[in-house]
Length: 549
Image (cartoon, rainbow, N blue to C red; front, side, top):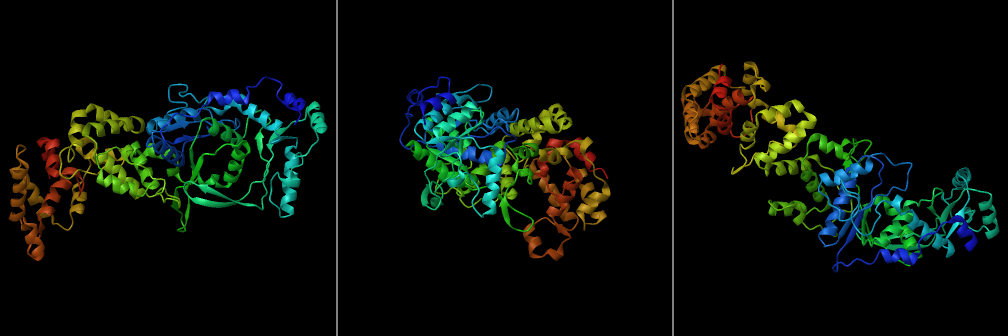
């Protein structure tokens, strides 16, 4: 394209390609180090797919002594949502996904390969567009939206692929004089890539996750520079991933159809493309029993706010996503219960390429394991933080009774042979500990007897009265249990489980039935953590008050 035209489009000075390239040298990294990125658009709430892609990208970079950076792809100004960037940064900070470069919470940017906001890189993109126009790799398109819509309608009517290509690319071969005329008339334009491809040609592209894939060659003359002077995603990511020296791109499988175009764009520049790995979407079963992609519109669990609202520990969701990414994570965690998840090495070969199925049972199992490993103080701190936002009245109860709460949380925890796993999310805390507080405890005699059915009322009364007569708060657990065994024997219940299992018809029940009577009246539950420890924490006065019948 003539310099006269190019200079009319860009009448202001732009950096040369050589100047730009010199500012972004090859990275000095060890062999095998990966440079990965996450590049969200600031268009709304973060979802579980964003977090999964960020986690995978961060892990592959850092486990290889590489670099993980965050780039904000904000060239589509119409879709930009106020506050979305801050939400992205807070999400990464909350989930401890630390980027080495790019914007970070409470700071502007870190790193030498920025700016990391695409809207701040406008001159860089325009410099490359200018270069492409001079090299005849791109051209000006003056077609209006109405003309393109008419074009699409004609293609559909003729059973042809919609798009701007071949004979449908009306501006591709405009003369230089016509272009100058249109520019002088002030006619609006965009810049399009002049694709060298032919759709009937089949090409093989290697996906780092899926292996060799066959595609039709790209022949679309896509827009690379919009009328506002900003690039489209396709062109911006080409320039940025080249200059920022990205080696691997982990992105959703919805981008597979764009892979031939992106490879073609890199080839047009003579640059080596990064290795693309297209990650399958997280899926779920629909009402008909079929798999489908988890949806931000249909499924609350697709949004990260769902997990915050429920009170899942952040690390629990991270470990669950690692479990979805690599199926051997579960075995690794079982063999390494006390190691941080960052010690687990993600494997590209084991990365799920067929679509992991979302499983609440697995997530909940991981979450209660995570909480079970916390100290009483950690449980208290985390639960309190959650309650302050979601149940401020109970948060006040917790703060007013901190020492009591720490004793409650320490039951079957530190030093216990079998650690309690009754808390799955912080939302569970109140219902799991409410019975320790008289104001929150409510149990009628009738409800208690229903829970203890088919025990008779007389047996229930005898068991409670005998326990109250002999109860001594200073008893060791062994003495306490011996008294319960005696009560069992006195009223026709087996104190020996082996004897009971051998001849159950000889007894009214067994010692667990006797303990259940006490458990129900003290806690209002037929299952609870260690009953002796509960009574020790509650204290004699509260225990006897609960057993008053």
